[in-house]
Image (tube, rainbow, N blue to C red; front, side, top):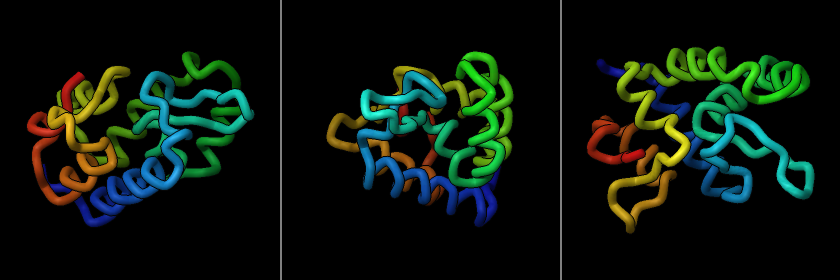
Length: 123
């Protein structure tokens, strides 16, 4: 499936965010608070945080991350233009680049450029 310009741009924006602030990237939770009370996010959480900021903060205020996980995943699938199989790879808590010399930000940029997720990310 071909992604829209907006979906490709969101992949690039997420890559920029996790590269600029790697301490706020936590693939294990869609959102969590670190020891300094900063909000960390997984890729799905970053997608919502960047594309729909108001909804993101409403959900954070709503309570435990687990309560809203299904909604976050469905919304991130829509925002990023993912298939279910792509989402299962990219959103898995142990998701990481297949190439150990590549960062997740690098992988996201390649996905934005059209490379298949299954060739870049493993869980």
